[in-house]
Length: 306
Ligand SMILES: O=C(O)CCC(=O)C(=O)O
Ligand SMILES: [Fe+2]
Image (cartoon, rainbow, N blue to C red; front, side, top):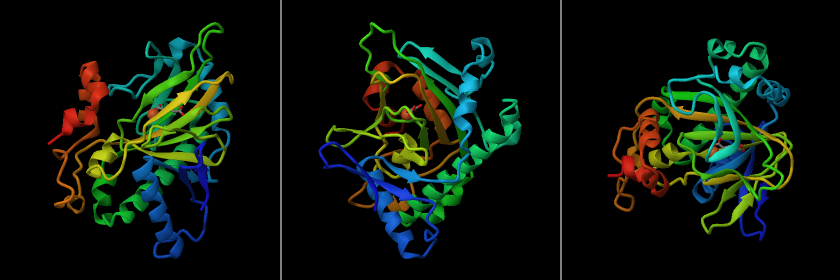
């Protein structure tokens, strides 16, 4: 199998070909893929999905969107935290994000006039990729019977992301500080300018260089909780290396409703670590109101811990 190799060759993040026609339930490719995915998520909290079926014009649309006046972008509001326009925050001054909540719904996309066809087709393809990959995760742990309850509360939020360049005389090297995502899963797609790095358990940062057909599938905090800590939440950052503006796309999949740790993840060797049932929205509410100490130390434990 293909992989992304870390600098000293001790790390290998799996690259899974989702365009492979042999990837069908019951096939040999299916079971070896389940193993690779499980390895990627347990070691790195992520793997790379190679996927050829996507809307190629999405990044030119993204540029047009960000070129709109800031007053227009600020009309992208949401009652839920992190689901509207996010711009030039003090902690991430180079970052701008525009999100479409419930993006698989045409009604929501229509609020983004002009972009309807391209965004809708891109969002549907990414939602499909997220679904295929998540089903493989469930299969790899033999918990496929719990998929329907998770699927029922899935909400895909598509976010356009743009990073400007730091001031010439600043010594900034980071575009997005190290973090885990608060959602169930995230799919990231980078344009030509890379910078995304994933941290291995030993602290090594691994560069994920951009390729048009490469989508990084990452586990968020909620998937870590759901798996009773079998899966790591992917710890990642975006580096700046003097390489111009950067555009990326993120499909953030939340569980907007209650889910539970499948009983298959709990036994003598793996006691239940989290109280349940749990809902993304309550966790995010907690996160935005929690003090810095709780946020940086271990927000999952502070909120869900048994
Ligand atoms: O731009 C990227 O590649 C990563 C963005 C990210 O990590 C986030 O928005 O949570
Ligand atoms: Fe992130």
